[in-house]
Amino acid sequence: MGQSQQPLAGKRVACLAADGVEDVEYTQSRTAAEQAGAEVHLISLQPGEIQSMNQDINPANRYRVDRTVDQANAADYDALLLPGGTVNPDRLRMNPQAMNFVRAFSQQQKPIAAVCHGPWSLVETGIVNGRTVTSFPSLRTDIQNAGGNWVDQQVQVDNGLVTSRNPNDLPAFCAKMVEEFAKGEHVKQMATA
Image (tube, rainbow, N blue to C red; front, top):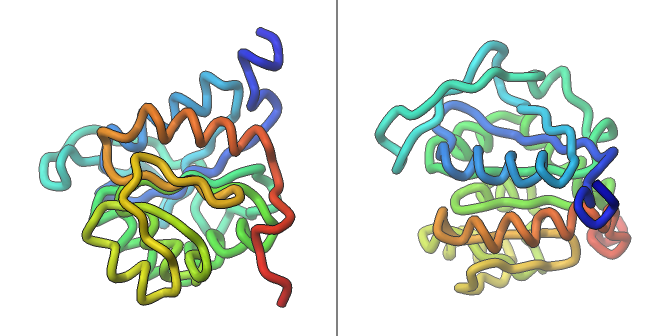
């Protein structure tokens, strides 16, 4: 169990998700972080449980929420994970507290990983402006309109920001997520205000 086997040992990761999260994107990315040694907390909009989905429309599993977004503080975490599914990030981006939570990770220069529709939160908060990212193809116009450079890549890393397109990209996404989360803060991530 050396540092190479547990590169995230001692790190805390916030996974921000709501009802409608794509089950495989939540479970595989969370498991990858935990197997790398991280303590992962599920942060959501309401207490209790969230309902995950398969292919956006088929109910999958329910997961216990560790903290609500109004109880969570980005300063308590080393990195942020944003799984997709279409309904989940759409709910999140309509919640000002959730978007302030996401924005705080960028302001604190902490790594962020977002897969599939997860980058909608990055669009809503302005984090994609000037960044090169990928996502589910339907977000391309949103990302470009928000000032981001969209690329069709399995996984894209831009100075601590890790993005992927869909569940098929999860092995590459999870590997890069762990790598970037292990690096920690990225001082050039946020433009000086």
